[in-house]
Image (cartoon, rainbow over all chains, first blue to last red; front, side, top):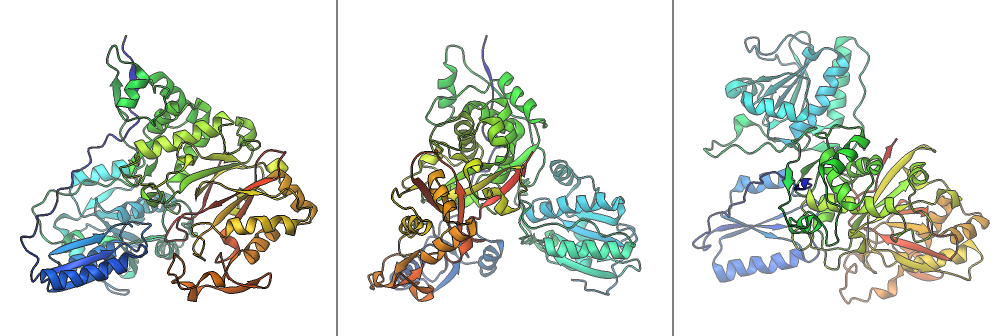
Length: 95
Length: 522
């Protein structure tokens, strides 16, 4: 006789995230940088901003910041980013 | 958006005559779900569902699915074509409007905010000439405030499939499926292969064992106790029972495990962040009250070890729930750099009988004689050893350098600590006349980092030094380690012999991080 178990795991079919289409070029683009609030994140993004401008010809770099790294991004910050519709968003995730 | 004193539009009988509270919601908005649970209670308290009217911006099928998940008693009407939404002119849901008996707007709010809901409910009571209904309280496990979502009628048009219902506040969910173990496969090995287990063997969650645990809980198997971050899978009674069985729990342990899972997912604890952190933190559960003796929790010798079945098995069940339902598998979402032995099991009981002070739970307002579970997202234990001190002050000086190192040595004002005082140390403090408040105050005033250590080398905590509070500790200029005395909590546990205690540091603290939570249970 076979053993029947109660499934202890998450059984939901989680939607698969599909990567956004890749930009062919970022020259002249508007790029948003999201700082999640970790120590050193602003230093890293400062340098990245310089490189994006100088090396890749990015026209505009916008900066956003989560109020705390410890919690998900608030809808209000997401809404701010959506409103300007940048060509791409780079998230400085964790340390 | 219609303001106070403006006339509510005539929408051909869609909205009944006031006074009433009108709420616009959409089905994939978590803040709407939070509001609906509160509005449903409100409708029940008024005893007249027509006083609280819900208008859904989605179709009948999705609205029915949402109502079923939230077990709403209130009927939801449909705002077909969003004509009513456009007429009321808001941009965020949930959008609430208080309509008086003359059909005029008497108040409104957008998003979920307990203060706003309390105000509107009180005003509705006044308009109806009835006693005011019970207020929503801070600390009931749901957030005080949650921003809403963009209203359906002002969303950009899209051909995309509608988002799945989030169901973050559903009270019922689907039953667990049954899994047949193939013939010839060892059951314990099968559980491991399926990814159900931690690396140690588990007790197979057979239907009979799980049913026994469900029966002991006295709850329905499909009842949702909590949603476990960061994947937010519903922790039904049945799913908790299956994980409890695997961890080695007796059916009777559901008495503690169910409220523990509820407390674990209390949004104030922010287990969402702890599940994915690179830090050492793991949720430590502290059990208080008569349940300790009734179930045999270890509170004395080896309190942090594998000394008693309830501590070990319930702690392991908590960790299995965090993996199997929260999705935090090591190396996947759980990215802790060094980990924490508490990730196997981290449950202690307080030795209330050997404490000269009130139990930890009493600090959170739990009455004497009641059982409670408190969670603190803690680093591994740091040892305090002091065998010579005969006076309380001398003894506590041994705690201060250990406290000074929690989180990071020179980072001040951004950590908390739980001090677990061993019974011999507690007796010394009692003989010196220290109350719990005295202990906390001494530790707060005497824990600091010498200013001389901030010599411009750029290490962690040094950049913010200008914002630290300066003090003098034993003639040395220091920065105070803790922001306030309340950053330090004190309890008593451990064996009767041995002059040892423990300090546990925190993870990120405050409303932007993790706050200790305490849940009482029967």
